[in-house]
Length: 88
Ligand SMILES: [Zn+2]
Image (tube, rainbow, N blue to C red; front, side):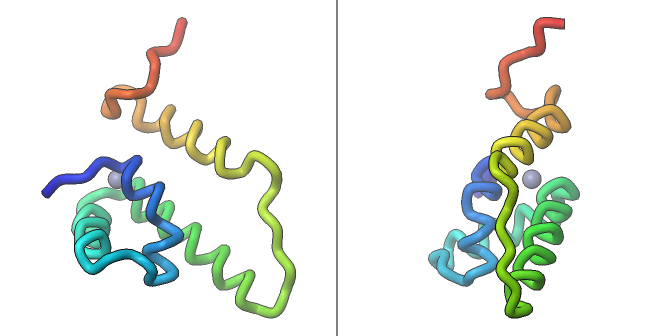
């Protein structure tokens, strides 16, 4: 089964936390093996977890998630089908 990057992004925290079902875990793992974008996101998310695990309070800036997703949507632009085309 093929899943979209968006699906991976929605589940990435669960993937790192190990709270996904076995099926979801496998689908995302498989996607990550051939998707550089999602692999990079996973690395970033993992780095954030390392920071938060270090007994430090660490809050994401407001809007971080939205900006990340917007950036990703722009990167994927021509590939992903559900981002409205730029008016440019
Ligand atoms: Zn992907």
